[in-house]
Length: 488
Picture 1 (cartoon, rainbow, N blue to C red):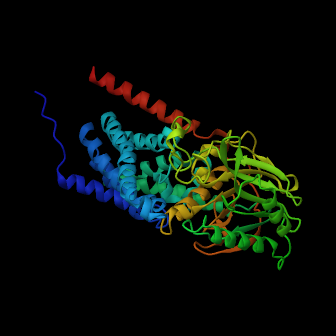
Picture 2 (cartoon, rainbow, N blue to C red):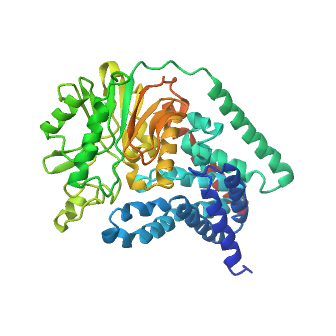
Picture 3 (tube, rainbow, N blue to C red):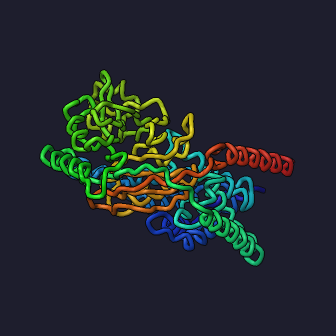
């Protein structure tokens, strides 16, 4: 006779929530991987059992994890708290509950398939799926706990989902037997750590002979579009672009939406070019084409002509555009962060800008840097340029998590990344993900830095997520077949 289905009580749910919250401390800016790893191990141990029970505990743990790791999501609603503040708690609650469903599904699938390895595979699949489903949101992946350690170098070979799989394997090893599993986990961790140290110790490639001036105006989001303050921030950027104490750079880089006028305002471009004094300027700027508006990055030459142009293609749902916005246009609905029209239109996709002697550059605008697939351009660039406005992310954890993910993109591609953030952190990231020169959060200033050298294309740069996707598919087919055969 089949036993009645039972649900876990308060204590197991509380333990699952505690594990999820402890796991979040492995994310930037804390980086407590040594706390996150045992928390993940305990959680996986508690998920062995019935699929329904595992799904419930996985949902509780996932909700706690995402709430703790991503509480910065309330910050955009506090820019104009009188108007939007009431939405902040709903955003955090619904985002955490929604993302927690990925963990619920992974827990149920892993418990159904049976065994710690099945759980590791299922949670890896959840991390991978989260990067693509519903336009994707691969923030706070489990593998991100290693970004400040040598283990992050593993991403050059297996990518972020592979890094999550490694994390889960290490955590799952002791589940069946501490006596046997702990040594296995220690060996896996030791090999990855040692391999990362060896890669970091390899000679760095020579710099590219291009000096970029990174401008950080520190325009607070609630002041950025105020006419008087916008003029002040514009003047601040002009003065920093014109400075010549250390000589002239080869390129000046301004952050995302750096000015309060459109690209079609030729007078504004003339003023920027004149201030730069013969040096080309790459700046984040909005532009209009018919009834559509774009969040763009334009490179203007010393004569203020647009030399190269990129339109952001991976937009933030409800932030930069409203789904089915053309249908809802008549109701006045617009993207939360968009300044023009009813929101931004998406560009055609990743592109490499040929800037002549400055090299071939892959531009990223804001949170495009959290999507590994957005770096798969038709050709390999010499370096990556990110223009972002992290003022939306607050001052506590959001900007640091965004920076950490940009560092991981550099590791995955074996390419340096130059980053201009409106309020910080701006800086120079080498091809191994190390942050060299930087401007701290909530400060204004500029730095002149040579673009570091690029490494040879990494395995992940060539193959992307295909290997880990095929591994997951083959593994689940094998597990399903085994379960079906055993049940017969």
